[in-house]
Structure formats: structure tokens, C-alpha cells
Image 1 (tube, rainbow, N blue to C red):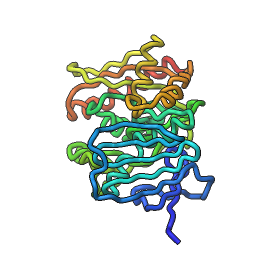
Image 2: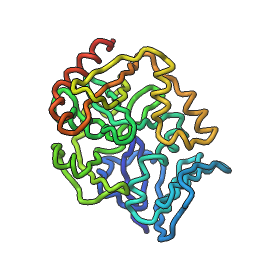
Image 3: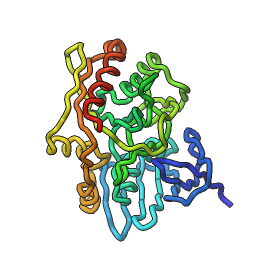
Amino acid sequence: MNSRYIYTVYGMTIDSNIELPLLTPANEIMDTSYTLEYRASEKIINNYGINIKYNNSLYTIALGEFATYSICARDGHTVCTAKDYESCFSTLFNIPSAVLIAIRQEVLLHACSLFYNDGIHCLTANKGVGKSTLTQLLGDGLPFKIFSDDTVRISRTWHGYAPHNLIKLTDETKNALKVDDIYDSKNIAGKIYGKFTNGGLKTPKVRSIIQIKRTTDDLPAMKYINDLAKKRKMFFGNLVGIPYYTKSLLNNAFDFKIESDVNFYTLFIPNGLIKLINAREYIKNLVVSTISKHQC
């Protein structure tokens, strides 16, 4: 009999045919949300970039030369054909998980998140701006605790779920930041994994969405966003995989309601890791004071 491995990812239980050694096994066996079947293939899977297709209750996700996923819309059974284990592990928590979550009529937000004052606060940004770095800096001591790196599942009741307690690091940030554990394995982008202690409640509610932008100013600034159109653009524009969604996935996504008590902000941070480290306490105080003004 083949071995099976049980993990909790985004608050959902995975029944996997391969061990995922960087993840913590589930403490208890619950109803399985979906099964994961990994198939190794030495062949180049796809040379046509990223795309999602839907046919006969089956989503097919092509992820360039790294992997192809097939996801059953009825039961979530997921088959990953990848050239190696790392190509599977590096892609699983991105677009494939976004599709699995969208099938449930929920969303996967491309954001790191911090736990503070009984809620989570999501940090979004364009690639390379420094979401993970800022999350690690702010979560390294009170009043914030790291809740998730890179992505967070948001339910229709706006409760948040982390994929795992791993954070991606570059060589520069590995040496500059304090991380609980660092692993030798790298993802397909060449980043290594660090481990953090997941903070806060298991399923806190999302309280704010904070868009991070770089500025040439040395002094960080934070602005409250009140315009609904800007809120929708920020939120839906940061859903994982949305440029590739099929019509049915788009319908599910845009049917998702933004709750009135979720606040939106833009946070401007200085360029450069050293400047960011030096401004850490100022940014912490700025975020706390700005959020406190608008929380009910």
C-alpha cells in the first residue's frame, strides 16, 4: 500500500502521495479537502507560458517548463506533473491553490500578512518591492507577529488562512534578518526558505489591505484609501493568477464582496534594505497609529 501524507494548507486538509518535508504534518486527521497526486516527468511540460483551461469539470493549469496541474472541479483531486519535486512544491501554493480556492468561491490574495490586535493585515506589492522583507522586519518582535508569507486565503466571511509557516529569503535578506530556521533547499526562483513562528489566532479576520510602494523619501508615509474603485482595483488586482482566470473563475472572483469594515491603505517605504532596517521602528509606529484611527 502506498504511503499517504496529511498536511493542513490554507486551512484545508491535503492528502498527498508524496512527503512535503518543509511542511508540518497535520496534528489530527480531519475530512480531506482535496488529494494531491505528484507525478515526476523529465520532459519539458509546456513551452507556452502560463494558462488555465476548463473542460468537462477539469481545470488544466500549464506553468511553463515547470509543471502542469489537473484539478477536478467536483472534488478538488489535484494531479501535478512536474520535472522534479521542487517544481511541484514551488508552484503548489500559487496558481493551483488559487484555482482550488476559487472553486470554493473564495479568493487567494497575493500578500504577506501580519497579526495585530486580533486581526490580520495584508501587505500587497508589485514583485520585488519587498513584501517578505518588510513582513519579516515588522514581525520581528511586538506588536506584530508574522501570519503568512506571499499569499493568504480569504474566506467569504473574510477570515484569513496561511499556507504554512515558511518565508522566502534572498542571500541579502538571509544575512540581514533574524529567522527561526533556514533550510538549504531553494525554490525555482533561487530563494531559500526560512521558518517563522506563526502568530495569532488560527482563523483571524482580515482587518486591512496595505499596498506597499517604494519612495525616494527617507521618511515613510501611510495614506488611507476611501475610494471604492481604488479599493476594488487594489484587491482584485492582487488576486493570485487572475490574469489567467477562465470566465467561471472570474465570475466567482468578482462576486466576492469587500466588507465595509476592511480598511485599505498605501504605505510608502524607503529604497534599500539598510534604510528599511533603520526605519523599522518608525514604520511600526506609523502603521499602528494609522490603523488605530480607522478600526471600529
